[in-house]
Length: 354
Image (cartoon, rainbow, N blue to C red; front, side):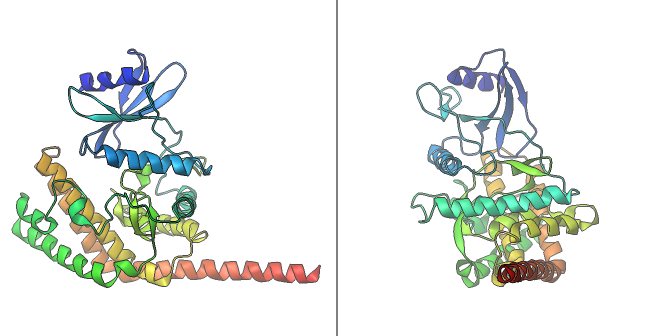
């Protein structure tokens, strides 16, 4: 694989003796830190959808449009090569790569409420920027989370995927029931929720903080037009590790994140009520995505069984705790709304006294 990596470097005039270190981040692509005497870069080599150049262009176009609006955090714009093209294809392997400047920072710790609050606030700021940058929803766009059969090129009949996997019959049946449940909920719930362009993958690993401030937001590969509330729902329970999977179930981290977010975007009660559904939807679609990778031969049977566990463990937790989750979300929103009302009243009294 090293030869494939080195075949990309000359395109951006990177020296052959530059520092090159593979990063143990993400699950879908190969990522390398590239160090030169004057700069640090991130090289991403696409693995799952190496020929899907239109999707890569959409990602870069979105990030460039956001960057032009001077966001309060850095974004991973693809760097062009000498010919102006920002996506390089290796003729020998057929794989594609992009190069970005390295954004400083580390992933926030669930045990650090300040970092989680900053992450929630940054998501709200990002969504406001996205809504401003795309007042009209783009015609050419990635599949939404409800468009299951377009989320991976090998998954054309999502309901049949559990039958194609090396898993026990009872787990297969649970997945099929989950698909049926989500299909019904999409019809009943999804399209009445406010929609806009969203990040689509706002997990803990895709935000970088420094001194309890978000320095960068990365990996817009799954951006799409979908329910606005899907982004914060993914942040709480749709990533590799959900807040409830942390020691002590992570409620302080969840509260800190949501308070940061709700201070800028006060979601409707209907949106909060359907967080459990949105978390289920996210995990189901990621199950489909990794199922496609498994059928491609990119992931092992053991890894795929782990994804099934990840999907069904969330279902177990939500079945037991979704009422508690919705109640707490509603309480956090109410307290923020009351605080905002008190602040407005104080300002009005102050203005009246002048």
